Length: 247
Image 1 (cartoon, rainbow, N blue to C red):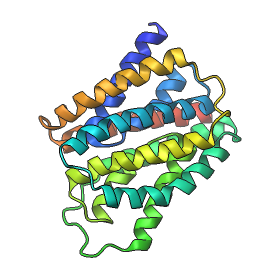
Image 2 (image 1 turned 30 degrees about the vertical axis):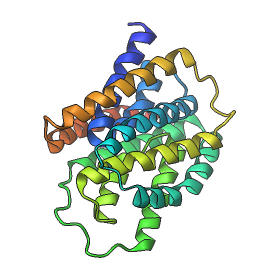
Image 3 (image 1 turned 30 degrees about the horizontal axis):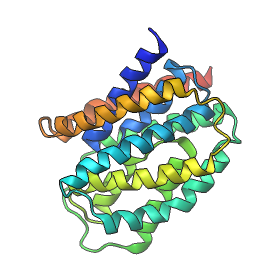
């Protein structure tokens, strides 16, 4: 199968998950770029940030149009993560490939386990600013270091820490992901290696189209079902990456 076809298929799947779940799909971008398209771990994490930033911004527009973005809350949450995203993005380019791959596999496994846990039924009565800032900073660091959007962390944090409704949390997480991805990309300017735009461009285009379809899919299938299926796929990917590092 040609690189172009693989890029289109992988992009569509990732966009579908991102549009439907408000995050999580971007976690598959890095392994897809490494194992299907032959990118190095450093190049893959940088390319993933480009794909995630463009796709999240597109999906954000769709959710904002429906009034499902808490702009003030999202901006404050994202602001806490800008500095950590920038610093982590700069550090990631200097680390060995095995370290990046291993760290990514662990985060992917944790993301899958988090998705399999039942969602909190009640939002907190009071928002703690320190917890909100800590969650935002942690999300920014993960985004900058591993090239993932971190929606699998942002959505539960926005619900459990900041008390947003699930639909609002999904839309607002896309704002946070977009800001953090751009900050991390800024730090990685000139350090991404061979980015192979002939692969990244169709990958990104397919992801953007998939994000629109994902939003429509979310209206037909329960979010819990989508999350469980995606979590199982993510666990399998994490296992493959851990074995690859060990061997």
